[in-house]
Image (cartoon, rainbow over all chains, first blue to last red; front, top):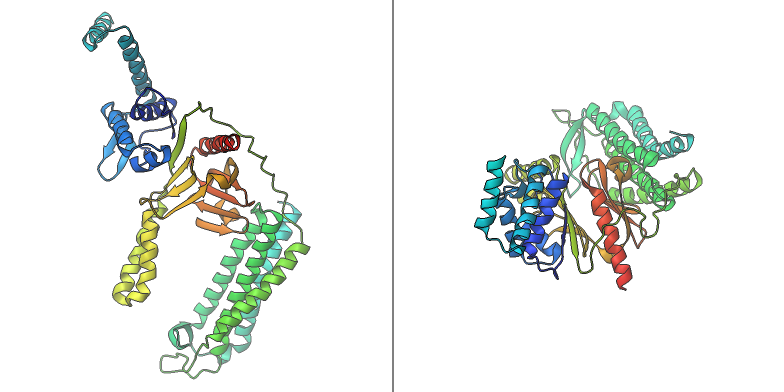
Length: 119
Length: 327
């Protein structure tokens, strides 16, 4: 899996790492069951802090894209599909745009609910 | 499958067949003077501590010489070596054949006319350790002969030279962007091998002594740390790491000239699986199939078999370009 981070970017490094995994799942480059590098290995490779990597992994776990198993490291979750990863990418974009427009999370959720109701 | 590769294969097979013929000839001419059970294994002082029947001597000798011979035959046939590496490979095969052939013959000859005990075991058979030195000498002479024969015989097919800097894919990186590629390279046989070697060590610990068990235990632990290896490509170079930070295999980026992704045949190119060092190349062979091959500044190749090797090779070439423009 290819990881690329830009330390000069305003996006937190942990989020950048999470975005790489999301991208790989969306592209089909990473299939369910594939192991992610150990946080220590990836941190040394990219020259970032181990906790930064772990923050990124934690985020992916909350999104249901990876599973963190004690002693066995991180792996792409069984439920992770390219579609799900692409949806998560779009949600990120949407939230970013909503923030730019000054919408609160409740306001955005209300819009989402309306869309669901319409469909 | 042309005449040249058949001739190379024949050249590689020859010393093993010769060694086998000599050993079989000794056996045939001295068969009646051998004890029923040949002294076949010796300890430090040259005394025998294990015995083998005449038939098993024949079977083991044939299998050992034909098995190793076959390995060198396939390497000579399709190993894709450069001229120099090919000659060294052939010569090394001659050395192995000479060494093994000599030792197997000595074991037979020291058993000739040995008195038998009640179980038919050869008595008063000893293996003077200077035979080992002679075996190494025979191997060295055979190495020279093999080198000469390889130089006179047909050479290997020209290996397509890696384009300087590699002409493959690149990964577009923004200024200041840091990139790393990591991929698990495990296989089912790695943990199994570690387990078997460790198991053998534990068995030896209880049945033999700890000096006998130690090498197996150390090797087993080493293999265990590599039971789930990881291949990493980043600004430091290419790394194959195990479960612990050390031991690991790393080739620094400074030493790599270009990288490519291609199918690798461990048996013909590296003579087997595992961590392999061969003339002109070093490899971590975990399975057959695609892998990253890095051409080093020293002219050697470093290869590792791993999935999605095209991405790894592309990143390696990108980082090499970056290094060149930075300096």
